Image 1 (cartoon, helix red, strand yellow):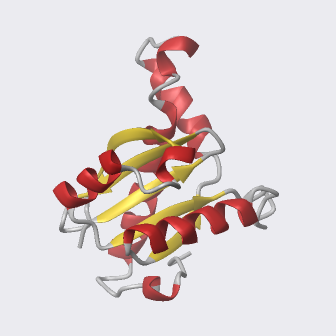
Image 2: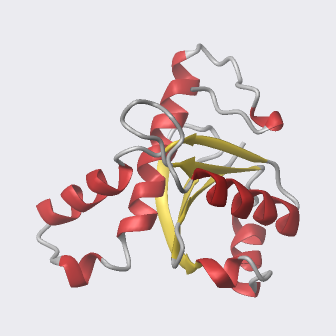
Length: 152
């Protein structure tokens, strides 16, 4: 099954995709969040090309492990996206994924301006890879993603 990860922000949404065997996450693209929420044709083509079966959306948790302030807004946007594009939605912890993405890009020599179009899609690939790794460590048992729950 291919999983499409979304790092939903107020302005931009980073997108990453898994391979069909659910082993590797790859950064894919960034889209304007308002455009995605209005049945974007470019995003629809991306869905047709990659044929994901699940939208995995990152939720901001606090360091204490509770949902952060933005979680309700992200849940609402994620459910709308699932409805608009006809895909089930699951959620996972995205805690510190953006910071890790920035660190990785800095190590590659990018400055803040050069990072601007890449951080969110790399963050999406980071939390997607963590989610895939957790699923693999359960010896192939699947999580209850169809009910919108992650395997946290």
